[in-house]
Image (cartoon, rainbow, N blue to C red; front, side, top):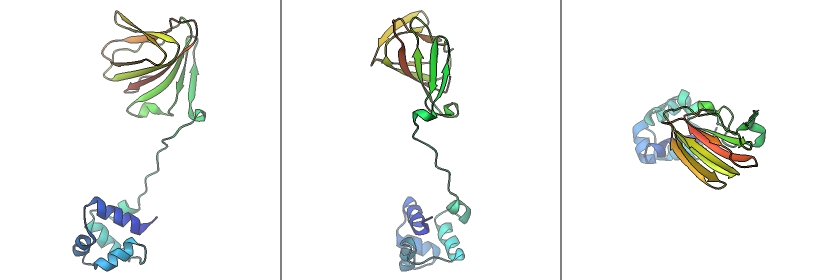
Length: 177
């Protein structure tokens, strides 16, 4: 851990100058400057004083959160192959997130599961093929490179009215798949 860098980041987050911080923790500007540049190391007591002036403490300062994975490859995908369609969960454990993206491959003349009415929103991007979005008594025909965006107040599903597989990037909030 780069203690000096972290102290400087906290000072800047608190919108303090070196002079302001020095005054708050009764240290010199020069000493704090050397700490921030890792030219000197404060004692534990002095570090506690600096952190208190920054609204923090030793426990918070040295606690490092595990970095969450933000980039995923096809090796991370989970696939569920059904008779009418295949779902690929492209983000592992997305059901714990605010939104859930999937890749849906819908076989010719087959339909997806019906999405029951819910409090949320959905977005779909047709990557390949032709589908019909059936929502209530309305039908919307979509082809590759077209999108849909809807709220979940009515049940709906996708139907592949084409003769080839259709592939859709489908994102729901909250997670529904």
